[in-house]
Image 1 (cartoon, rainbow, N blue to C red):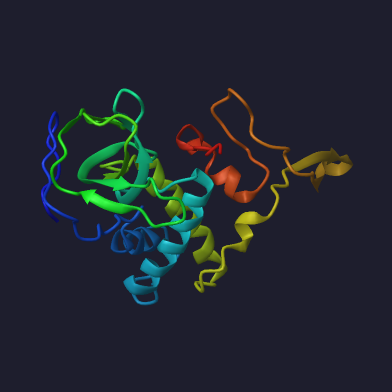
Image 2 (cartoon, one colour):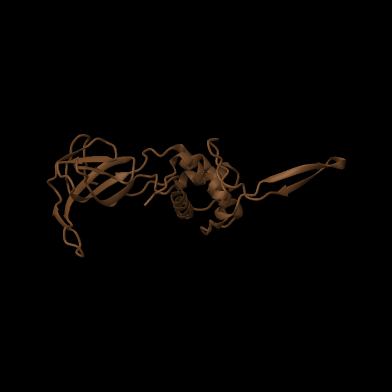
Length: 235
């Protein structure tokens, strides 16, 4: 990976290599935790390769629910500076800005043409904004955004889903059970010390302001604690 911007200045060094995405939960650690939880033994636990593939499927479902990838991820974004020469990046928190290219997009129906990929001056103050000396200019920004380190809650919910999958014995990556509605169980006491349990309907959505999200699906319930990280893109 080439060196990107330092706070307060731009330093251009060309397109960087693809950025390997950090897993929400390391597969080797996941295997150890599954054995410690008594779900498997060291002899019959799934291989690291199988768990790695399964954890990627789980991460995809978590990212779809969140509306973005929380792990450090590389992005190439085309946007336009405002009248003050400021551009706001879509993904955050921004960890590193690596390249800016200016585009000539004045001709409708034609692909934008890079004018100057290497000689733009500006300021990045380690937030979503970049400040250029070029107002109302179309630019392409290559940058890294995500949480580093990842908050612990992400690995916890990933392992919670993994445990549920492991208990079913189906490690094929079928996560359709996460879309099933939540049905809470209630019970009443009967004469003779007996009790009867009933499954109620779906919980009807998140509980606002309580800090807990029961949700309407199994995935909503599991990820309720990550509600503050969820984003909705309005177009």
